[in-house]
Picture 1 (cartoon, one colour):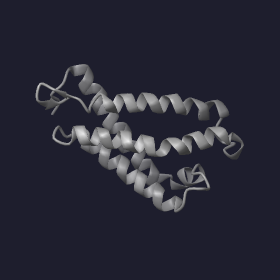
Picture 2 (cartoon, rainbow, N blue to C red):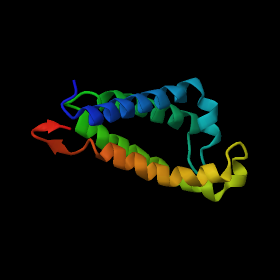
Picture 3 (cartoon, rainbow, N blue to C red):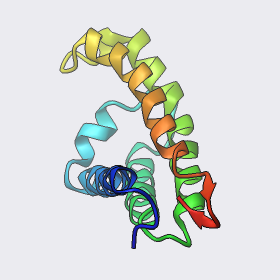
Length: 130
């Protein structure tokens, strides 16, 4: 299934499994995600389920060579969509006492790394999605 180097293949599977697991967690522990959503975002529970389904779908799709490129772009779009909420959380740390302020701020650059990781799989190599 992997048409890329062994290292890149390992990172691909890790990326896919990470998003599938994170997405499933939205359904297993929806209250956690509802609690961290900013008040200005409507339909908290519905959006938790939609984003969870998107993560599961994109995580699985990134493992399919024909879908890899579009799925990686989808992951990037999802990361950009949730970034304002992560900034809101960092700027309002007192509203999230169960998460350390440092942890809230560290999420911001980590999100940049996640974007770069997904972007790695948007490029084509030798006619294959690698």
